[in-house]
Figure 1: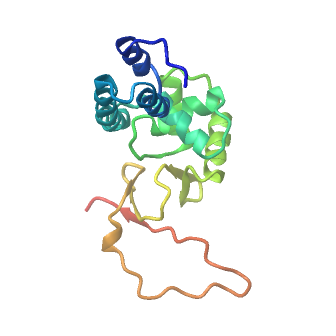
Figure 2 (figure 1 turned 180 degrees about the vertical axis):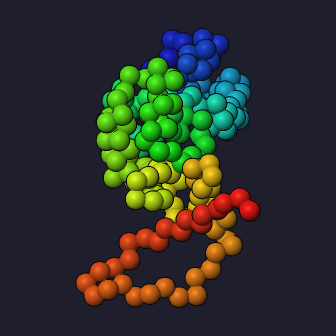
Amino acid sequence: MRRSTLSPTLGLRYELSLTLSQRADKAQACRAVWPKSRFCAIFHLKYVDKRALTMSHTAKTETPAARANAWLNGAGLRPTRQRKALAELLIGDGRNRHVTAERLFEAAKGAGAPVSLATVYNTLKCFTEAGLLTEIAVDGARSYFDTRTEEHPHFYWEDENRLTDAPADAIEFARIPDAPEGMEISKIDIVIRLQKR
């Protein structure tokens, strides 16, 4: 095996600029080249400790753009400029939210994203079809889009036209009706409407 021309200290600087998987490969190569080197042992320990620290740090400090790109790529959607802009508004801060197309359009305008209302509607439908959002119909004219996609109940605050998550553990089904012949139940939406006393 040919010995690397990098010195241990230069190697450390070089290693730190690589991705985690590349660092793991380089650490193994380092141990092969300098098997008894104190540097390799120290580097390996630092690598293992830094990997855990870096992974937890990355999860907390991931940028809205990176989170949006990962969200779109995870669903196999091409990250166009409009999709990325809307995805950042929807999940950029890592929180779940319930939005209408109109509210998302207003937020996009406020953020300086050049999208039309028609683009917002089409993008929300696309995200829903890809499984990134769940559409909740509150009444015939209004739908909300939820970034939390597993089935769960909602509160609809009628005075505020607002949808929020309701506690799922407080709801019990004793029985549900059978689906009509030739049909099956695809999902059950529970929207609990609230109004002031």
